[in-house]
Length: 245
Length: 245
Image 1 (cartoon, chains in turn red, purple):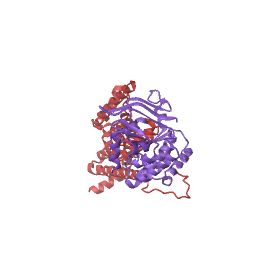
Image 2: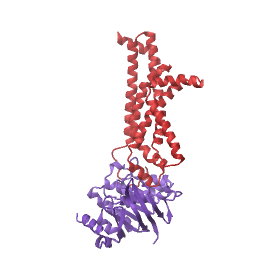
Image 3: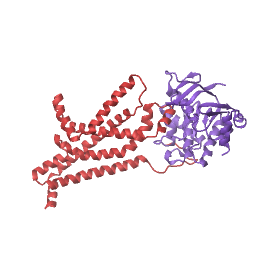
Image 4: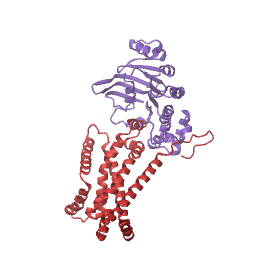
């Protein structure tokens, strides 16, 4: 009976599943955070207004070309192949035996970064021109405008897309089994290899993946609402001195 | 009287279209100057050129006798001294009312938080929005937003206030509350440059009225002169069209 097997597999192998789930979540989380930072930087650089002339223009142009190549390349190739290329390539090219964990985090980060760069760029472009003008009109420079006015709004707007990316990463870390990262899929495969119960073992993995992605989605939704603040505001009374902000 | 802003031979083109043609014009300290004219006459562009939101094509803009189009001139320092009020309000969407008035003071003028909040409260009181300091821009009506925008500009304690059609995006019943605030500012002797379609208001508060047509200053003089005894044929025509509405 399948159900009995499921119970048995879970009771015998739960530390293995837990370890795999933990590893999956860890790689996905770190990868998403680093990827988001890469994407934020790349997105900001790609939206710097082009100077009309001078050496600054050349430098910015070269950086933009490099960023374009990075984005197009990592969006245009499968992560499973990138993992192989980076892991075995680093050994071949630099003669370093890269830790698989490090390789896993690097692959997920730069892959996420490529997607996030475009998401961030879209977020920045969608901010009303008036926000920039108002910031400039009170004397803010580009950096101040970005950090105080534009990026806070961009980050709020791209939060759903970032959460989406996180969910994708939780699922897609499974491809890292090709470089023997001990994440959930890899460990499930070894559990199944021991008991020859493929359906039951992977059914358990399936459930774990779903619980993780579902929990993450809910948490992010809650976080989004929190960030938006209350719908109402307090109107101050005459007597009330507005001290605490 | 001391000239705060003096525009000399200012040109501006968008592509092949010449928007401003050889504009000469100045604003004295404590003066309220209104710029009137039909849509597309270049009046908004002139205002936007003055605080460099549009790059002038040629000519000079003198501020307290210094040419700010000089390459060495610090445009960020210059913009701090001009308060700008936009047609579309352009409040910082990510900040509440108080923070909108404070952020520029802290980041640009390097004031302390306490000092900045004190100044902000002072001007929010002037515009009658001191009770709404915790509201986010999206929770306010158009008239309220525009009054906050005025307070934000005043909080920087600029030498000149520039108003770019401040009531054009407002519902008719909200125009009054904004004009009332502006009238008060005019009375306390603030130097103001106002692009407006509110002819009654321009006639009443201005020390001087400038009529623009097809990118040139067609006529300028006291409100009495412009509205009651216009010399130019096109001024007469424009006034006939707008006042008979």
